[in-house]
Image (cartoon, rainbow, N blue to C red; front, side, top):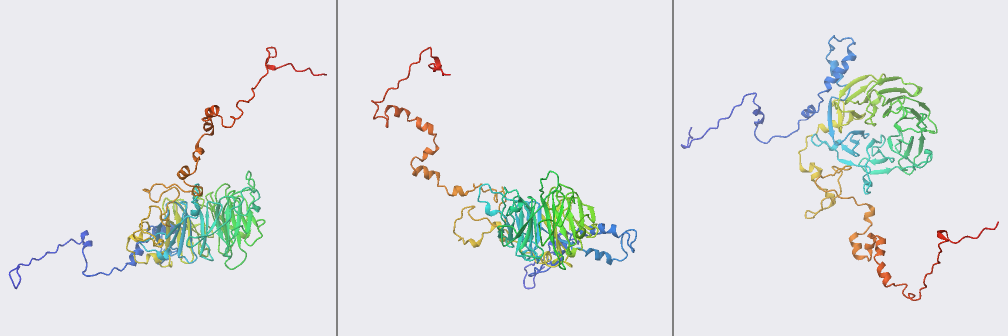
Length: 582
């Protein structure tokens, strides 16, 4: 082929053709020019859909609906609209996974607005997550705190696993932090310690005279109507009611006297719940002990003795970690370490109304809980197999079961009524936020509706420098001299950077002592501190004998020591003693 103006040939490029099913077609451009990079929100939502949800809901509900009219023998309804309604009963169609902990998650809590999620783990850290700052590609915690970080200056300091954390339901600015330590703490929503309750005198036998817990605190909760009051349960057989504005002493102390043989009147308090009727009325305080006793007090006092007590409500010496009160204040549900879930009526607090079997995980994870859903229309809890169970609040029968972390125990669960989303914490360190785009609002729905953030070096806090330190670009910073940041700091016994050598901790005693080399060079006779005093004196023995310094003046006039001569007859016994006159 040649051009019209000249004889220069023009080569035609033949386009390569691919088969319709060729995978290379996915790499070919579909258009020319600048393309808009708008996020496909619908595709993001579809990717977060749970694949096990539909199968699980059908298998669980089919057993309960086989006997209903309108069902054929195969178990399917003649009306297809029933299946669509069943899928929307619970917000479990989609999920968002948050992986920020290294070990098992023991407790979770959402603030009253549902915008901030905190989680505690046995890795001794608390992670703070903010839904407003997350995107589908940046799902992580914005801060990691250790409640006992300020005490790491001492040489024998250590960290403690987190037993329970809970946002104040009436004021979301603070949350209660209970770790495996006698002192509970009140921490702000940004991770700053607001108050630390005092520790009691462990040498006092009568717990009524102590100002705080004398041993480990197991759990705690907030007052249902007073934002300044909380209660903690400890292994010293007491419940202590605190005013967060007075950390020096508890407001009330509730001493539980165990009647179990061999317990010496004491038993560990394993769980506590404080509820109030939604329509108003007297609130109640219910707690469980290790000896199997379930105790109920009047929430407004007096606290001298319990209003009701059930001995052996669960099997003794098993950990009853889950307890909750319904929104009307009439029902109490407990999950014990004896593989039983029981429902109690506070008006007839003697025998359980319903008792069903449910495999417990309290022997491995004592913080396993059970919670009422919004408006007490359902009860949710986890299981050893990693399934989420939604129970009927009347007969405790399973209405819905879905695997969340199959094969890994599901420890803690929670259902937020405002955003209508379920959060779960598992033994593998994963947090699952279950939601339904049509039923839920904000929270994980907003996260998955945002455009993915482009990855940048600033997305990894390990590779960036805190500009608040005011360091210039030419300054030389010694490795390890900068203060540790919230995310990525070293946990107990583990270095942040494995290539960095271990720096010995400088104790307050070492900080107040001068340098040893400076002492030996500038202070006379300082080396004598490290010498044996006997050897230091004996090396001058010969000099003192030849040229005495202090006894030289009367050396010539020193009297000669004379000893009495002993005859052979007297022997070793000496001269005969005078006869004693009778």
